[in-house]
Amino acid sequence: MPETLEFEEPIAALLREIESLELRPPTDARAAEIAALRARLTATRARVYATLAPWQRVLVARHPGRPGLPDFIARLFANFVEIHGDRRFADDHAIMTGFAEFRSRAVLLVGHVKGGEDTKNKIFRNFGYARPEGYRKALRAMRLAEKFRRPIVVFVDTPAAYPGIESEERGVAEAIALNLREMMLLDAPIVVIVSGEGGSGGALGIAIGDRVLMLEHAIYSVIPPEGCAAILWRDAARKVEAAAALKITAPDLLALGVIDEIVPEPVGGAHADPAAAAEQVGAALDRVLAQVVLLDPAERLERRYSKFRGMGQPGRDFVDHGE
Image 1: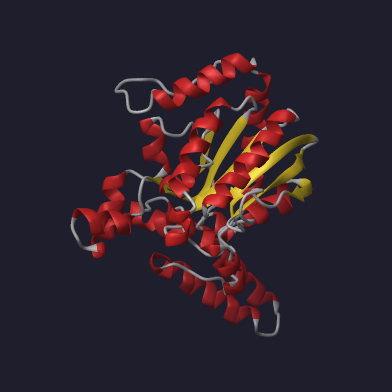
Image 2 (image 1 turned 90 degrees about the vertical axis):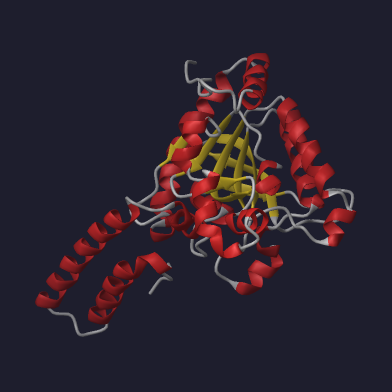
């Protein structure tokens, strides 16, 4: 049975019942009972996920079974060739980048990788916490995309940049700041997809783009709720309250103009049906990429700059799909 979250107990109970019936010898009556339970499961998932609180969305965004960049590469992209190393220090495994084909269009992929459900791979990927060399690798690859006139597709899924001493010694703040400036000026179409957990500057370090999409149950925030609660109230246990105050959900961020579009997820979240989630992402990416590629380069850069400079201005209409 797949891992379920704390608020998914009604779903877990149905899954256990279905699993128990499937282990028994098959009969027509049992098959009908399983079908009825599956219908109830779908209805229960729809009911539970229709009213998720902000903290519950945090849990969904962090679900270990949630599809990450390797899953999207396997389902949406062909002929992926990975680019390694920043040519300065090392190859950061928390950020993956490389050229691939998306529906006959050559693109550059950049994204965080948390490591999925395998503990050994999580350690190898540093749980998605990128170091300075990861951001420098990403920028090196993006400059190659600019040189060869390839659109850039970014998948954001990280708790934050790695906060360790060695990360600070190698200039993580400078690496992120440089990426912010250079991505604003890159003469290549950029589509950003917040697919899971968009945390702090670690997310923003590769998240400057012409369009910023966000999966329905992803989160995007200047700080994780636990960190916010610890700073504001000196009590990390108030993370639920912090999650609501931070406005980290996709509907909140769309209303604030921080993102441009919400990509729907399957009933029960992307982890419940990764294949269907990939189809939704692929359809949105295909449409949005076609829009930004057709823009005049000078106009595209001006719109990108104005989009980010204009965030936070009351009454401003941030989303422009008039092309």
